[in-house]
Amino acid sequence: MRRLGRFILALLRELADESAYQRHLAAHGHPHSAEEWRRFSEARQRARYAQAKCC
Image (cartoon, rainbow, N blue to C red; front, side):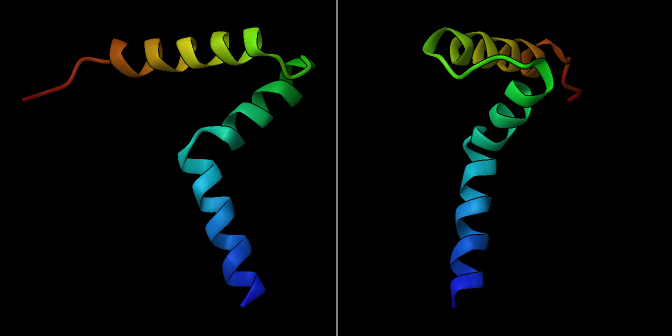
């Protein structure tokens, strides 16, 4: 039961970009801050909507 709970929490963190943000902090060596979260979120949104969609 605990494994299922951990899996669900990990899935929710991934869907909410929390896991990606933690990987971003680790890769760039930045500490967590509101400013860094804003930069990360804006970069993800730009990348997501910069790609042209077909059809």
